[in-house]
Amino acid sequence: MDYCRGLALAGVSTTMYTNGVIGPITWMTLTGFATYIAYIPFNAFLFERFIAVFRLTANAGFLIYLADSFGYLGSVAVTLYKDLFSSKINHLQFFINANYILAVLGSAFMVMGTIYFTRKLKKDEVAREVIR
Image (cartoon, rainbow, N blue to C red; front, side, top):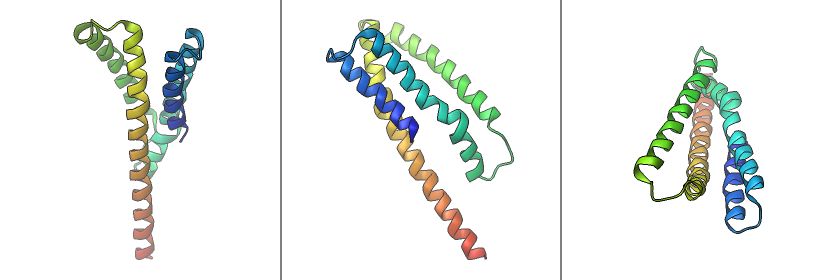
């Protein structure tokens, strides 16, 4: 669950920054590191496990490419949203809010995904035992 730790670090470091515990350079470094830690398991572990759970003949290359594409699309969408719909909020407050949303929603989705794949794996193991 390293991705949840990364997302939690983004939330905690943002809270520390808004409360004046850490400075802006430390905060930006921590949030960059935190989102990197949350992103890497997708490219290395989660996609490979996804392929294994569904017993697909594939590799993670296409899924990595797809995730990167949506990441770039998301960056453009966030920038457009900020400029078109949240122009009254300054960039700093927008980034702070985005970090909180990332930490909460990202962790919730990761936990839900972990529960789903754990249940699917157990169900597949039970099915294999019944067949034997």
